[in-house]
Image (cartoon, rainbow, N blue to C red):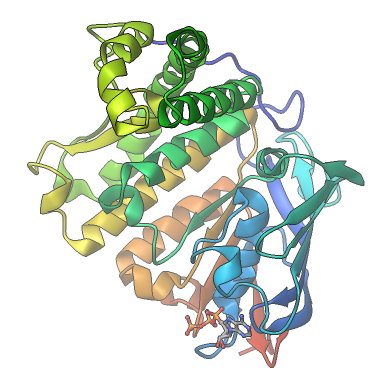
Length: 393
Ligand SMILES: Nc1ncnc2c1ncn2[C@@H]1O[C@H](COP(=O)(O)OP(=O)(O)OP(=O)(O)O)[C@@H](O)[C@H]1O
């Protein structure tokens, strides 16, 4: 059974699909983030390039924005180096405009602000002046899609990365998904604790019921979302990696869903789960397959192809969000020139330039695709812990 999500975006109300609507970061402040003691950045609404020498801190700028948008870094845990050496905690502040597609490019839209303080162990956050109690509230507020050197993990990494990808998209397009996700996570935690402590059958029955109810809903949402993403993914895949033939996405729910309901699968596996001390079936084991008509499977992809497939999936997610809610997320492309060859850089930049999305690109130099003839590119340079407008070339 495939559930089509109800259109209930976590973005500007009444926005219409089309060019021009989107999230535009107007200010990013960093305090004690890697080498930045205190820095502030005001990107432009369209294409932005940040240059700087190796180790200057370019990726850190995108990493800080990603932290606010995902509640995690794309380079390991916060406590493993994101906080400036010797500082007790990092702080990130983001101000952005949510512009509906009918709103003029400059000046319109709703201004939003969010702040996050993270010590590695504890965190506190605010959105529009109010304290948040769950990181998920920050994640659902600010939409950023990041492509960075580790993004190929979406294709070649563990299922965990792909589940996070699906759930992030659903947090943004469906209000009702987050409570279901929380309900499932809580039930799973409780059931696993019971399995470990060899709890009684009556208690297990109760948590199985809760887990199965939330799990069936979670699974329907994820499958429905993947179905909706597929047309954009096919279209972008045809453009970026035509050599792979037709690309497709296929959901694997984490149990034999076409044969048994989750409640039955939990019961059937109960004895095994009791022995193992954890729940072996359910949406926490879900995955999706990226298939290609011209190749036997993802193992046959070159590293560059894996990156392009991952980029296609990320851009499909952004494009879907734009058509579903009328708002493009911010697109952050870390070290673009070393990730993609020139022709792919050109294709991606042309596609994003035409979309009206705010794009943030980093590189040791201005990427060739943006170097000549690109109007409206705003340039910045990172040096000595500062992010400053770049001198004209
Ligand atoms: N916890 C930390 N405290 C202080 N400085 C740090 C910390 N972690 C990393 N750094 C420094 O911050 C910088 C990190 O820079 P980042 O990776 O953002 O640079 P980059 O400009 O993207 O570099 P590259 O071009 O080499 O990829 C490096 O100079 C690194 O040594």
